Image (cartoon, rainbow, N blue to C red; front, side, top):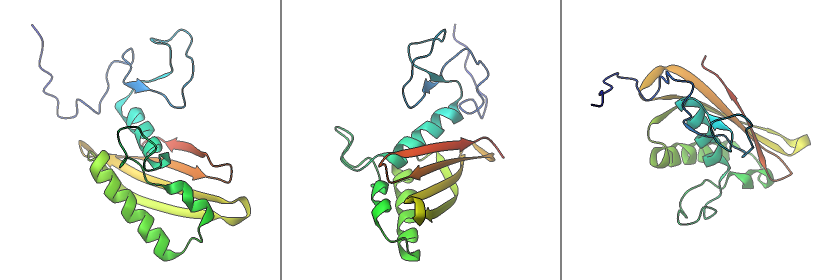
Length: 155
């Protein structure tokens, strides 16, 4: 008979590190792992991957999901103004409400480095089921056209 898990934060608190939650991006081979691809071991790491991928996806890029994405790569060719920053922040909040409704955005920082043709987006968030644990994800869009990402652990 199965045992019902009644913990309040059962989807956030991953107890068994032997169980993989998702696939690590970018794809890579993992030798000696529990599958062919590198895997994430916690729900938070999997959600960080989802956030990075959502920020880097253009509208219409995903097959059968034309509304998925944000078109943030166009920022490299825009003059960053206060009005554009507010528009980007509102777009991020709207898209997250639709595609990642379990993520609460706490802070969005957008900065540019003109000499390197880069736009940096730093997003601080928490999960609704764990409001006291903050994490952050940083995505950098550069002149090469691909966004690079970094993420920080809990504060």
